[in-house]
Length: 160
Image 1 (cartoon, rainbow, N blue to C red):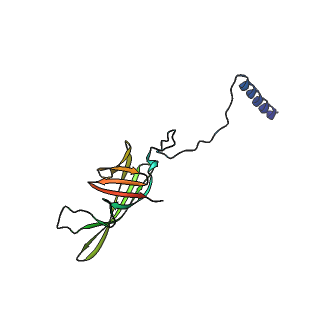
Image 2: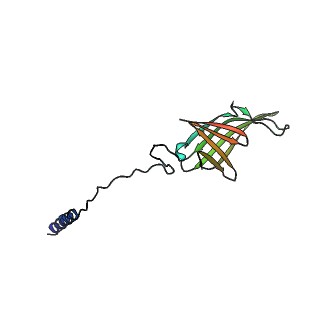
Image 3: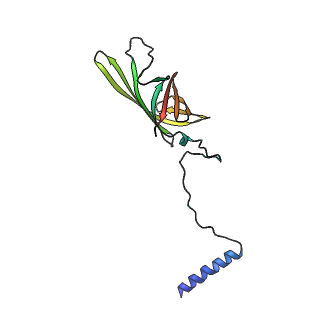
């Protein structure tokens, strides 16, 4: 008997809903996009998703690696940049690792510089905000990121 009442109530609610013009839409699945992506009608992403990924350092001031950084102190042994990796995440976090080496009387010494911080849009370009202070402009051109660090241009190529 309860079953008939439930079926009857359901049919009555459907008839009343249809008679006053209510139409229930079937549930739809919403697919969530990347967290910081804004896609306009052109289909082009203008958020960090457009440049997110891992990049390898391939040139400094248009010189191939390894490259000796200019030294302001003539008494210092030259420091060479051997390699570098920059990882930009869609959430705005970045991590940068650079491997250096010096040559002296004791031989070759290698050391790594590890940095991180946040990345954000800056007009048509981007800006790195370093943990501990400081910021650096980033220009994206296709799969290449150009980072001007105190007058020295570091160029990174996106890894696939």
